Image 1: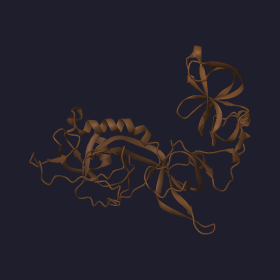
Image 2: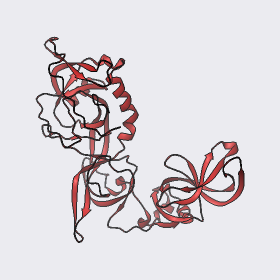
Image 3: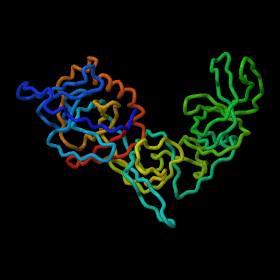
Image 4: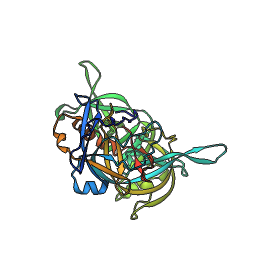
Length: 373
């Protein structure tokens, strides 16, 4: 994955040859092709993306219409006149937010471009206007028994190193901060691996059994202390109704009102307390002013001709016209298309759950949202 600049010039006139009134052929430099070149036969009709996808099955290759006036931004600019692979449509609610920074005194100001957070983002937030009060012990978390918790400090515990049912074995370790899905309370004699061939049996008084973010089973002794927040609760549980809001962290969908139809305006400022930051530079401060929630209909695309493919999103609701590549049979050959298609398949799930930075390329006043891989 790379955030290197994507900008390769079309070989001027190279490979251009008449092929009927409705098509044109171009040749491009390609580091993935054995010959160093990639050939595309273009339709001479330019259409909005929504029209192209209505009549064609993804994946397809397109390039922006020559009539479009493109102005890229900064070092992360992309050359949309080069062929791009459109991989999959994606429709999801997204939060648009701005970074907030404190200046002199107590005044705050919004900085940088919009950051765009999908509804399946795995991070958690705390409202800025409500002081947090973390839970101090594992036993107190166990009393509430939420669906998951956020541990903010290292905590002594155990990790399962041999999940074989007939010979489950644990190792004593320092459990890292992170989100843990709570499975229940265990009280049993467990095998503890001390290194080498030595195995020691010990009585674990009581432990909270959890699954970590990397899907490992871990045990938190109830007597352990630390700083914990309730992450997810069961709305149908009466026990969870008693959770102190100051001991909660929230997904953005819990803080923003997403019950309405269409776009929803927000008035929330929150701190990101756990979760991946944007990979693109956006003056990220960790404090975000929630602006509005929009249900976007986009298509996930992939650059094709640079040394390092990158994923991006294009809006289907508005934008310039594009031209379709007609030689789609080359998806079944060893070409740049197959390599980029493989990359898009591998990275799609991770990409659509990341925070992205909105980049306005001002293509006929269209909004193109780019997330660099």
